[in-house]
Length: 63
Image 1 (cartoon, rainbow, N blue to C red):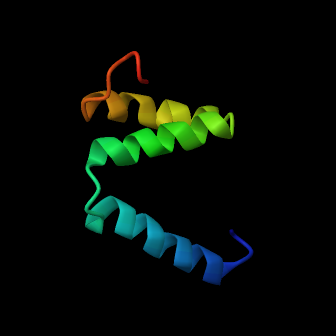
Image 2: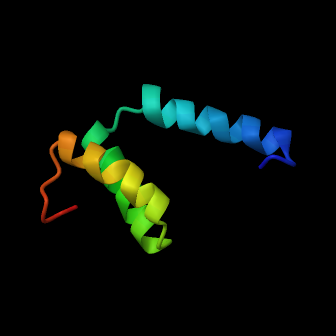
Image 3: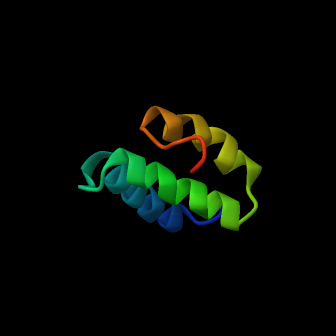
C-alpha cells in the first residue's frame, strides 16, 4: 500500500470504522481477525490479536 496512497487512505477509513464506529461487539471483531489470520496463516495477526480476543472474553478453546 506504500505505492498506492489512495488505497491506504481508503483502508484507513475501513480500519477506523471497524475499530471506532462498528456496532459489532469487540469480541466478534477480534474473533473475525483471528479467523482471517488463521485462514491466511499469518502469525503476525494471530500474535497481535490472540491476547486481545481473550481480554474481550473469547475462551482459550476458541482462540
